[in-house]
Image: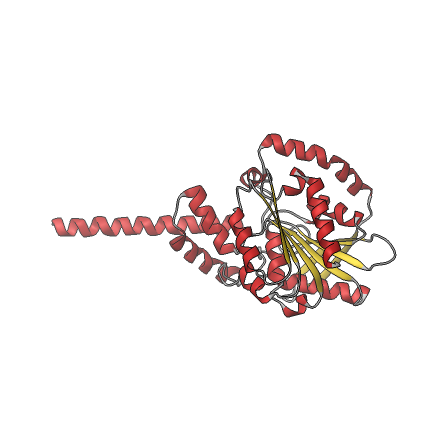
Length: 320
C-alpha cells in the first residue's frame, strides 16, 4: 500500500503541475495574443511611476494640442491575409520627398505616437502612423508581435510607393512592439531595398524571449513548460509561434539599412540587455542611445531634447 500511495501522490503532483502550467500558459495567452481591449494598469506601471507619468503628460500637453489642430487623412489597405489595416496620414508639405512610418507598442494605437508624429513632422517628414493589426481601427483577432506585422509594413510601403513614387525616402520608427516590428522587417529583402533607416526604441528580441523574461521576473516561474504550451496555443489560433522569428535573425540579414537603437536605462519591462543583443547582431551602420532614467517607452519623455537631437543627427549623418 505504501508504494501505491507514493505513486498516487506523485501522479497527483504531476497532475497539479500540469494544471498549473496549462493555467499559466492560458492566462499569458489571453493577456497577450488576443486582441487587447485597452491598456491595462500593469502595463502602464511598466512605463514609469505615477509621479513621472503625470510630469510626462504635462510635457505632452502642447503636443496633444497641436495634434488636435491637424487634419489627418484616414487610410486603409488590405493585408496579405485579407484583413483591413488602418493608418493616419499627415503631409508636411508639397515636396513629399521623405516619409516616416510610425509603429506603436502593444495595446496602443496610431494617435498615441503623438510625440514622434510631431517630431518627424517638424523635421519635414510626411507621416504615416499605423494601427498595427488587432489594434486601433485595424482588423485582426490576434496580435502579431512583429512576426506577422513585418509583412503588413511591407504592404504599407507598397502603398506609399504606389501613391508617391520611388523617390520618397522612407524611415521606420517604432516603440516597443512597434520597434520589434521595425527591426524584424529588415529580414525582408524587399524592405531593405526601400527603407533608408530604422529607429528602434526599446525593442524586445522576440515574443518568446520577452515573455519568458516576464514569467521569470514577475512570477518566478521557469519559461520552458509555459512557453512551449503558449507557443502551441499561439500557433493553433494566430498561425505563428513566438520563437519562430526574432529581431536577431532579421538584423543578421541586414547589412545595408542604418539603425539607431534607443533604450531607457530604467526600463522595467524590456531589459537593456535586449537592446545590447540587438545592437551586437546588427551588421549595418548603427548607433546606440541609452537614456538615463528612461522607463519603458518613455525615453522621449524623459529627455526629449536629447532624443530628438540624436534622431536628427543620425538621420543627417546617414542621409535619411
